[in-house]
Image (tube, rainbow, N blue to C red; front, side, top):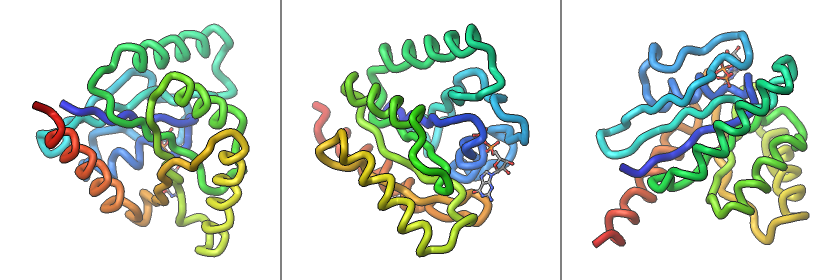
Length: 181
Ligand code: GDP
């Protein structure tokens, strides 16, 4: 089955987003404690695709050796996933583009892994500020990329962006079915 990986810095709101997408509150445990999702979790959605929950990266209070283990984990995942269609990199809409996220996107690009950006916690900003922050992000990306990736604006607490994301994934799934023999 096609699979879609969700990844981002710890505390970016990944568990909450996954709960929103799966509509099952109990599935991915959210917590105020960053760095809690440590293993790769798979969720079967609509019986036709897998949502892959990757560990959060860049948690400051994790030791260097733990970071290395996480990094290895993540790179191993991407090295061997043939079913992976797209990675979704989550970033907090409130923050300026962070080097760790930009470096990770760069790494995805260098390894030929398509990705989209999911902006989280959109309920924390006014519409004008959201527009502004997305624009800033895109401009930073355009310094190194020829085009900007797909961007999705979401809020798990206000249930914003769910339909757009699911529609996008479904459209990619349909394309896969059309092109496979
Ligand atoms: P994870 O570490 O990336 O899995 O992040 P969590 O989903 O556990 O969320 C981290 C913190 O951000 C929690 O305190 C959540 O309640 C909060 N949070 C997550 N999503 C949203 C959102 O859309 N809006 C707001 N206001 N807070 C959020």
